[in-house]
View (cartoon, rainbow, N blue to C red):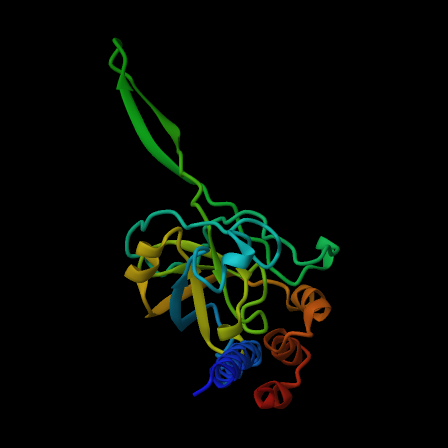
Length: 249
């Protein structure tokens, strides 16, 4: 083989290598959406598939530790205990809005403030032998729980939806979304590091929804970004066009 032949062969191999890289890049940007699942019934108690993510994953590095609303991702507080199923909501603070709205017409019910008071009766006997009874009221200080970030399909759990894991008592709020979550009944829980993310893995969890986010707020926010197919699928579902959302690939 002459020098010219070897040079031409080298150029051909280089061109083929570049073509493979370009085609791989196109395939990554146009990979198919996940298989569509019919939405769960919108009830206050649900059994959902949960996964975990962190900001140092390769597909999240471009966004750093920021959520879809532009705020910082937050890790939930430590597990408390196995939460009891109660009718009373634990406060999670004001939910972040996707867009500004008039609170007087808000879709979401307001969470009731959580407080506990301990009452005890004290009986004292005076020197004259008479008894006096009075009730002493003592406030019990309850620390406000640290609310973690969660990613989900906003057509199923709109932005601002707050929920509690019944297995741990931890509270999360939906403020993020992702490609693999569009059209799926999966909630992705934010973890502060790779170790905790791997430790959580994938689990079926019972959750109690403490506050539903406003679907109209989520729709207004997502419509500005629906050039991306996973966001387009959420928009279609929020508009009630479920068959089109399921058919989108």
